[in-house]
Image (cartoon, rainbow, N blue to C red):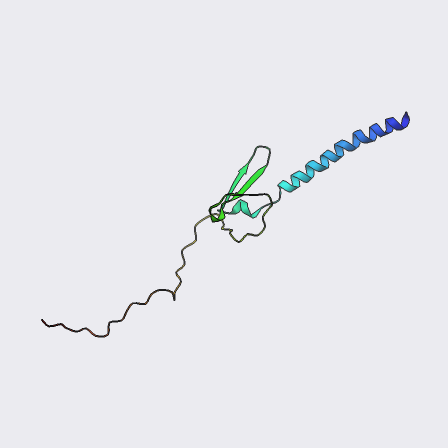
Length: 105
């Protein structure tokens, strides 16, 4: 009888401790910062419970993300748009006029 009471006390104390650890682990997982939170290609939705749902729109298709992204080739920071860059060397050159001549009628 004494052993049974002891097991009930140990189990009733262990279950809340395990639940607390699982909640702390879940909270730490949610706190991980993802690169997508500062990207123009992402759509971030947050719930009142603290859940974060992130989708990526890079390339025109909406893809749900199940991981915390730390590096991405399609990353574009939010904020002011960068200026367009002109690349020289690929522009057609104007044709040169060698000599003007008069055409008589």
